[in-house]
Length: 75
Image 1: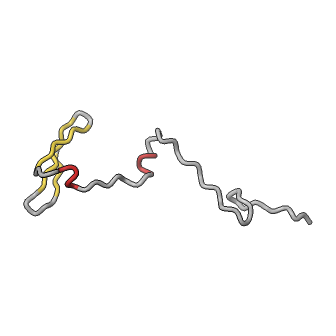
Image 2: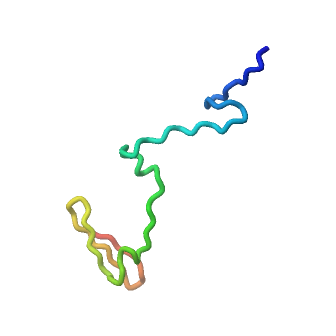
Image 3: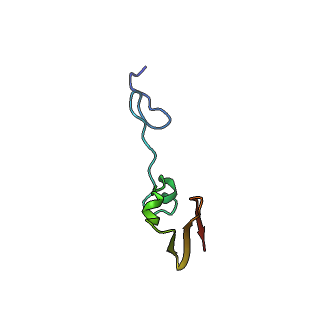
């Protein structure tokens, strides 16, 4: 019988850290959904304004705060 180590199903040898699966290229469409979303504080967007206009793909959206401090996004 051989003393040669046998690879596990994921390709690593015993006592080794398993290989991580290959990450999709940054240009892949699904790659942006695989990463954690960017978090911004609402004050970074709103500043001292109650209404901010956001242009997205040629459309204008309104982001506004209510009297109760909630956010509303409308087209």
